[in-house]
Amino acid sequence: MYLFGASGHAKVIIDSLKASGKKISGLFDDNPEVKELLGYKVFGPFDPLRLGNEELIISVGLNHIRKKIVERLPDETHYGNAIHPSAIISEHASLGKGTVVMQGAIIQSCSEIGRHCIINTGASVDHDCKIDDFVHISPHATLCGNVTIGEGTWIGAGTIVIPGVKIGKWCII
Image (cartoon, rainbow, N blue to C red; front, side, top):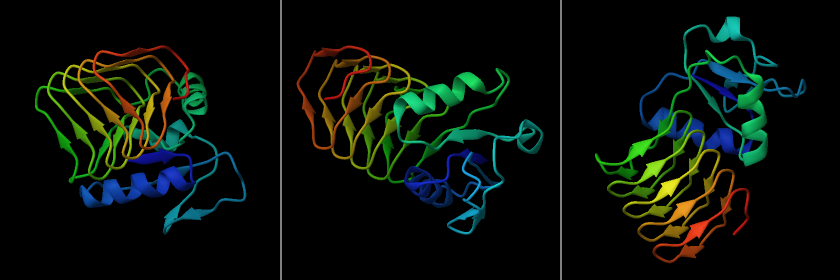
């Protein structure tokens, strides 16, 4: 597994991957000053040859930047997921590629999480929620049942979204 982005969000993903027993091969980052993060080598800009057949996670917290990175990478890039073992995910929920689920998060039955989303520390996504691509559900946010969140939206820390609410694309709540 490689990560693209070597800053704070990558640190939490590294913790989740290590706790899950996944091997971390290194990181890519466009900042030439960053050489290492938490003991893992940063190889510089993305290199598909170095990545080979390994999985990649875009470890950038900003939704619009994550989307721009995905759009510029080759279509055949193989994305993985990082799910902390303390997260609770219903067997009837689905997660898109590149999505990360942090410590203590809960995703309930029949919820659909899109690609390259962040379900952050202690967040709760109840039954039948539909979360589009590139969404960030911040720490301790609560989505009650049957909530819909549009592409790129950021649900702030501690936010409570009541049942059945539909939130559009690229909003900040």
